[in-house]
Length: 295
Image (cartoon, rainbow, N blue to C red; front, side):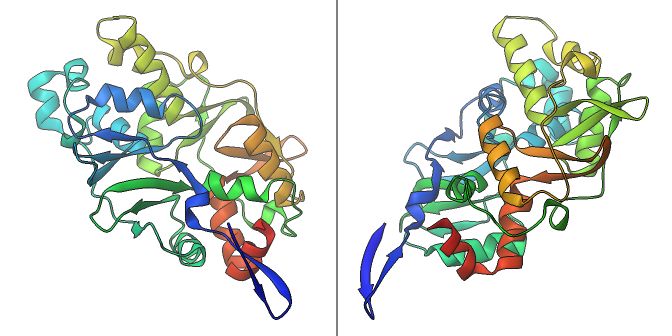
């Protein structure tokens, strides 16, 4: 952080490097199972930057992309030749996406926030002048600066109300297909119309990586044939719709989760995620005011 004096006021200028959440990257020849293990390992990691040996950014691999491969929506020729389990040993560069949201490491904070707010993008990648990876800036870097602050926005103003759920009797494969189809990272699990759990892409990848590390044959089929109640998280972290967004920030960080279910009494009325908070707060409050709150 740089502190300057301007018109007898002290002005603090935050560098974007202060918001870097990770500078870890996968290599192009790392096996897909390694990426699955890292994404499923917690800490809200949804994706990995992929670099070549000299650190140049070559792409991005996300949890959703890995799930698409495992249910046969991507790389079908590889799966037909290798089978699901052996496909996990193939290099990650066969499955990665092109990296789009790349900024030079000296970009200013306001530009990044504007980009995130306008595109509802969960991350940006920082590189040097040679295109070498310097770090990834994700929602959590901004949320940590907002913790303990009153935002002045109610949760219901920014939550997603289009709910996608799965029933308790469904398989992990059923849930995976629904998450891929609906392009969501998490599904509330219902029993008798009431929420009894939550399953995420990271939950599935974590189970898969654990099975492979234990040497379980046909690990993919084993995990996908399980019932969702065997994999889901039963401890529900929720928030009320009229709560200040600052309360949601506090819960997300303290519970290390990527999203909160929103309940009005016992009824599920929405979901609020990290990107909902960062992107929509930037839109509603404006970039300048959001930067001031993070100071």
